[in-house]
Length: 170
Length: 308
Image (cartoon, rainbow over the protein chains, first blue to last red):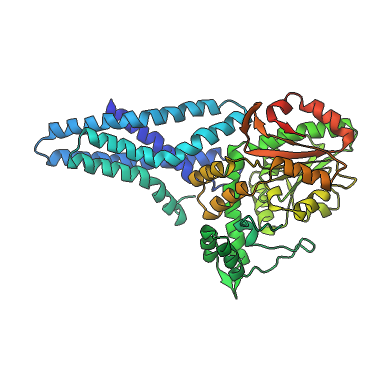
């Protein structure tokens, strides 16, 4: 359940990374198709990141003399990460529902009070979740895996930006 | 337009047009760099340093590319703050008042300094007005107007964009409109701009700009730092909020420059609470249409907050 929830959060997060990377780069009025493509691209990139983390975890489990203990450590760390990530995701989800209210003022407020600040603090939240998880199971392998997760979560936007700069993304 | 207290915005400093002939004037790179160095605006210095030059003059094509890119990014702010709808909601009571007052159709609205024409295109895409209203986007910069036309054509929008001086059109505006323009004009320059509204064909104007408040620079930084990709857009966005005119100052400047309009500032606070809005708007209307405008606005005046 914990792993499934983390996968879901990673997918949603990467979907919005796709959105953020594409935002401000297309001046059409109707951008629904453009953003759909961008979000799909983010989601696919997220699956690649999840696969990399999965392979790394399997590799670590295969090479440790105590795979059961390591798996328990991974799970313990993951549960602690959720304590940080789930509230963050919940606030954003609720805000999306509020934004659906067709009011110029309400929509503007969601931008000012939630989407702006929460986008800005995302790197801090990513790091805080990983550190909180590591504190639950402070071993080198858990640290290595969490380091990989943080790098992928924070690096994905940069990678998409570089791909766009080189003309691979439209 | 120059006020020594505020650093100019990059997009103002890297391009220059003669307002009479609309001819582009060369911009000497070292002059711009010195100007920003004097203001200790390091971001601006870095942005300008990266712009290619020819014989010491900023390459116009490179400048245009940068401006088109940054306008595209700035559109994001208009989209997030629902600016198209915001403009439409304020224009409707004005237009209705003019109709009720017998102003001949079509009522021509001219968007001054429209850039890539977001407002004009948004109003067209959402069929916000009937055929008795004509909205035209005007800008000095041909590259921005070309981009506005290209975007409108891609979405098959029936829009008109002109490279022109908004106050020298063959058919002047019944309503002048702008977004984010007023803070570029300071002192006498602001007075001159507002004075130009006072012509017999013009019945009203609606100018949106950043609302000056103690929180505005921080809010603007928060918005731009988290969302914008281009350093130019980030820097200009913050400087816009820093240099925004205070509501009462704008109102006083307008009343001095164009006293034949009844003017007020709308959008000073949110829902009757002492919470400042991101944008406020300077609205002026001929006295003959003012009662109808106020009546058409109805309860919205209270929720917008008004200074008069």
